[in-house]
Image (cartoon, rainbow, N blue to C red; front, side):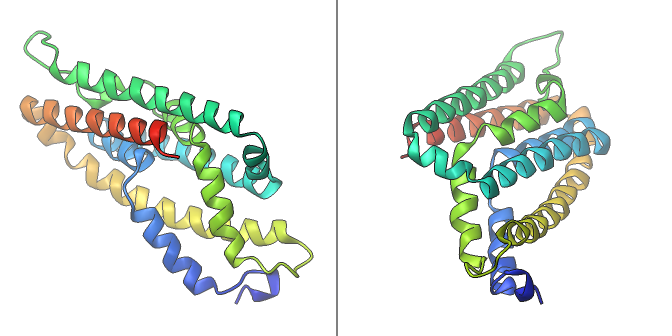
Length: 211
């Protein structure tokens, strides 16, 4: 179907994309938390930040940024460190807001998250490993003989973004249904915020110490 545009084995690619999108990560976890804490509108603000960040990374991938990161390992390590620090910052804020006493109520993910769009955008961009992953994944499905590989990358990126949009939408609407329960049960809200914060710290540690 897309072979005339330099895309190889699109159905295998689609299966891989679905598996990748369903894997839990900081982006999807953040969107879920925002959807549960602030509702559908704020959830989509966070999702738009993820879409924009992923689009920028995929554009950089097609433009060869991954090669630059490979040639400049110091830059790659610096970006990893910044990403790990940012994730740690979000995680610690969530843990602090979950457990500190405050007029009998604990602040939830929604109060600790700040601007959903900006937070999600930074969260998406501060992951240089995503660029390397996208290149290593995309290149397997691009015909090297096709004269316009940028178009092939664009098609692959569009498929990935559509799958991501569908998945994040399901998280937003599913998470918003938890909002009423969070508001009624402050203990549940504190536990949810604490778990999200702990997971963010785990992601930060993995980013900092993995090769």
